[in-house]
Image (cartoon, rainbow over all chains, first blue to last red; front, side):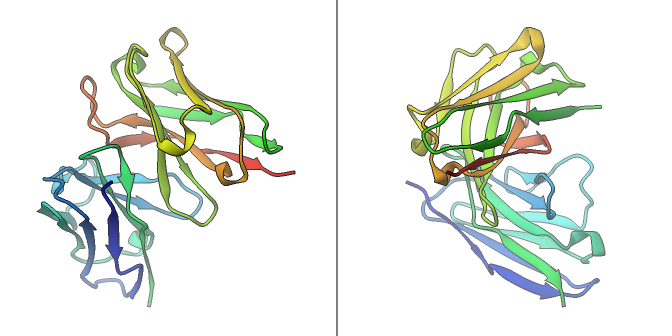
Length: 106
Length: 122
């Protein structure tokens, strides 16, 4: 079975910072990877699919890259509304989410 | 407005049953695969099950196979999750989620409901 890890599990950052979150799959998943943002008490929101395709309506400060086993989500200039937990999800096989990365205020 | 609204959650004893519903509006429900995704308190996301547009294909995560049944009624724009033999570890917020594209499933989720809480406890 495919395993998904994310790093770091949490990070503290300031508005305006560039933030990078990594997602790693235990075996190659091509580009079958999505990223979601979740705020406390809210449903997740799809940000990126196919590793690097921005979902409609998502700000361009979000970007994704990678293929195979290693992927990154980058927020180029962190805004106050970006403080949240971020999950990657592989869909090469049945949907499987990573454990999440919490981004909070430094 | 595209919307998914879940209902049916609550407190149930171990071994009990519960049926969740999800009402869809604002899009052509019958064109999309649909899924249930859950999140235990303070934990991450877990996909539970999905169903094809016409109900002819259904898939489940191993931990719920034989206990949960996903179904849909396209005439009522509704998705359901029948949960039997519930366990403490099924305690979670259950989200209804739309597949990312009509037609062939993408196994990504672009529209989510607000979730309904299921608590399994004696």
